[in-house]
Image 1 (cartoon, rainbow, N blue to C red):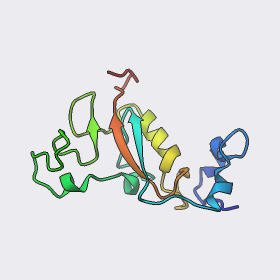
Image 2: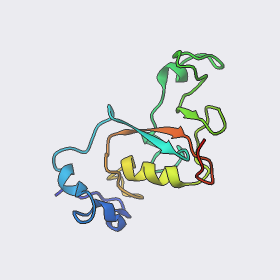
Image 3: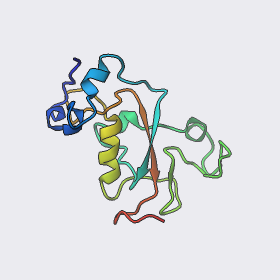
Image 4: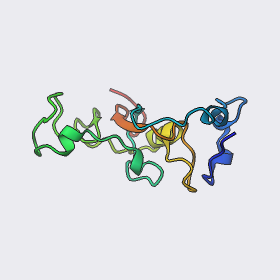
Length: 138
């Protein structure tokens, strides 16, 4: 079985066969790819986190577009890393750490010798902030 070298992976109970998802056995078949996008609908995501920085999905029409313009026509201006519905802006950065934790479980940079191993090594993370710092939604 493929085992990641992330120093905290051994502490991730959800990677074990019981009671977790048996990710190590699945990794023998696939570790995911960058075409997979996982929406983290939570308190936001810390996109500067060392295990997440390279995994954050980017909205390239907005990233390469004109500042202050809805370049992709989806109704959200400059939503480069997606959207914060709590503050109604384009900054879905985490102010609670819960969304960052969830993002790490789903798709942290894996087999890089630091932090944790995400279930999908290849997937990108799309931060969708719908919960405020107290974990209350709108």
